[in-house]
Image (cartoon, rainbow over all chains, first blue to last red; front, side):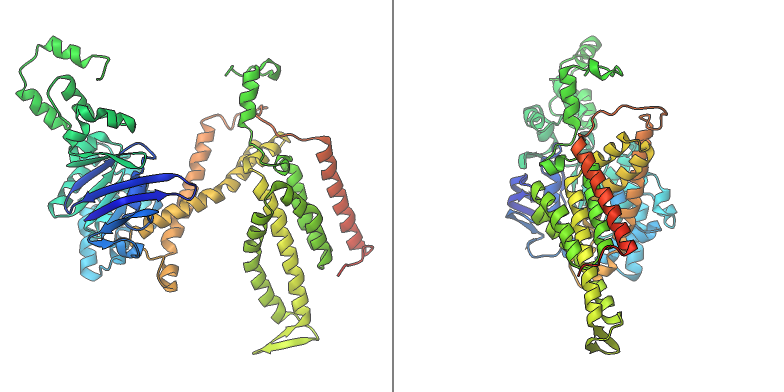
Length: 284
Length: 278
């Protein structure tokens, strides 16, 4: 679905944000891209809908080279929900805001209405369809911005820091949305600093540093102990569940459910031993 | 860093060096001039060009007051480009209106019901020269002065911190709004807004950009104000400045000379004692 080959991007000031990225994302995958600020994550995703163009290398979207295709055309395949909802919300009603992108990609009449209603329902804002977006709090405006991308029905949905400002219920809702999207064959890619969200929600993790792909694997591989030096190289830490699994000798447990299952199956340690390990000042 | 003692003589060398590092770094001797001096040059050049009129006087002002400064600052090429970009759209409007609506005896040519007169061409030419001198003078100030340096200097001279903040926020908001507008445009294009298509599509795409730019700018100004208030911005009483900008007797003399010179020109023109140059 997304194919990047030897992708290089140098900004006008001379910053080499991407330094030869090779990446293949297949249809229906759930992929998280992680890395410290400046590692090239956002630069990479902006190539997928043509907002940035490669300095060298190529991007192929759904079998067609992105080069030469207009942003408005690529947006029919790749929908990107940006981090800050206030940089896109302009309409006086939620319904109009959500309809904007869907109309731009060609939906009209009943199909448009259905897409708007369904996505507002998915993000839990159907009851406020006629309210002003600025009557909502930040976290719900973020869900509104997400809805406006979902309504476009693009085969690829890219979410830039979707959990920022969300409480536990908001994160759970976003997790459910991500899973439901891939159940119907849509591809979901996120850029996130929320390692717990990444481990719990995505089946593939791409670690970036200095404009390159440092690691590419399952959450168990990306957050397992052998990967920790690579994570540290880009100022990241494995989620707590993964760290505890390693400390307690349970193997890779990137998710909390995995940790609990491993604990349930592990030989029962003496409480004092376990408490001692948990309280250790050395995380490694 | 040592806690503030209220007495600058107790600062260590390291503290002084640190405070000096906070001041904007000057790229050239012209950049290093006190902001008020640069503002005085820009203002007097602009006002004098309009008061004197004609072609010779504004161009002389440009040659004497603006171009040497631009050369010294190393920004002449960039300044000229900026001034042309600013003055051309206004000049076109001025030329169209003046050439065809200015009454005159010498008709050059006719377009429909409108006569293009030589007097109209002359009037437009004079206005365009003044606009260009204004753009060059104000552009030189803008390219060589950091807004925060100007505001800090005005505050040192007794301007209310609140007024100074309002001025700084206004000046700094412009580049921030441009940056934000680009980010907003990217977000709307990601939702299929066609900014590369026909003219009609581009015009239709303006509304989704204007709303977020204005709203987010207002929000940002509010957040900046609150951030300042929580750091005791509104506290009454005298305050010290971490850094100040150099000013000296020669610059003060130059400012007074510019002011007195302008007043003499103004009085001379009003009284009719100063002949109009071509």
